Length: 215
Ligand code: SAH
Image (cartoon, rainbow, N blue to C red; front, top):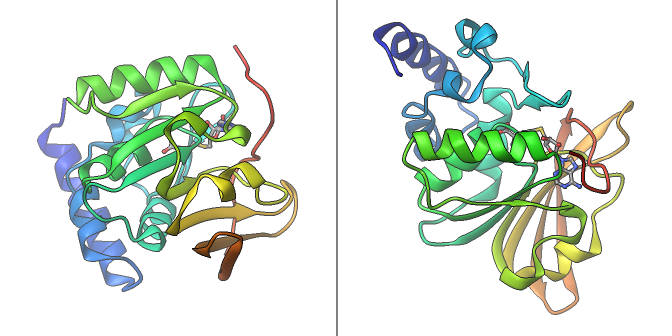
């Protein structure tokens, strides 16, 4: 499943990400151990270790490795923390969160992606990542509160449900903005009940956060 060639290409990619000096070392160590090609369609597998997004099913994309490194660094996930990911997609980001020690709950609105991600995670023995076929706009109220929430699709505005499901002291990392214009990556900390503090981490580009389920 993870051959010599892929391991070599992956080492090279991680070296480039490390040299950029922008990412947390623990995140890079985990990414060095996740076979990204296994999360992709075999026709793109040879490109898996280029720092690019690639098509997955349902007209979605697997996030670019530097984007995964950036979002995961921004999230400051600690081992054992409960983390909600909105937008499972391929399951790659969920695998990274899980190998960092997070207790991962991941939500996807496309049934084929949800099914495939579950299979891939199982193949890698990451069966403890909990995957849900849901509209992520509602979050996952029955498992709230979460210490960390990561959104991997760009929302026009921050959904209230996600703010409510964040534990006090917790962090929400979310790209906000329209699909066809500039989006900003925000990190929001819940300081107390209704008191939130937002940091702008710069511009970014994500697929849109859309309502409803699709099969
Ligand atoms: N984290 C993924 C990135 C996938 S792209 C990975 O590592 O591969 C973003 C994903 O968000 C897409 O799969 C898209 O279907 C999903 N998405 C968009 N809006 C959503 C919503 N309201 N609820 C759940 N998932 C959503």
